[in-house]
Image 1 (cartoon, one colour):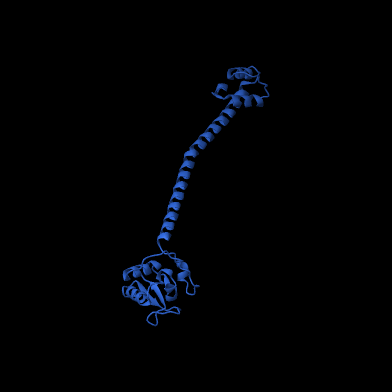
Image 2 (tube, helix red, strand yellow):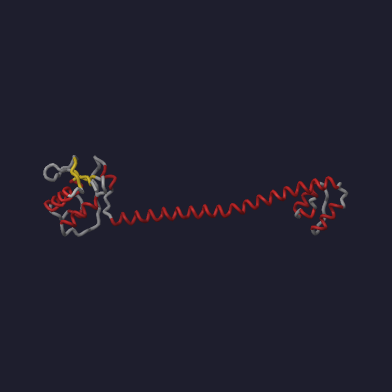
Length: 200
């Protein structure tokens, strides 16, 4: 059978308060003695001891659950931190790639009636046909398009003769990198090529 001693002091005081017993200050044993000497019936006392013992155990279980929730919370925090680190690494990688590639604003290039694009590209040395072909490939991803007007506006190509530029474009077409398609362009190559699409 449960005893008063099974309760902690706060629950002993709550029990006494319910019995309207004015406890004097003292140690746990003193408080228990005051309750037992108050004249309360054993049945009533046992009933209240059981009541507050259950309340005490419920509070203990609740506290234990809270303690168990802490590791789970820590795991969630670690998972979120991992996701943040991953996203930051993706953003960093994209930023690095954007500095390495010419700033072409590719989404604008894809639009059929896009306004003139200011291609503010980094200075590069285009000394050979191979350099020119490589530069032109860097302008587009597979599926992107660009007009001849847009190509000739690029600062890095201003010192390249039209013949060399035409030859480089033809080489890329013959190699299956670019495909000529219909498109509005004031300047054309071979009289009819006004727009290019990168195939691969």
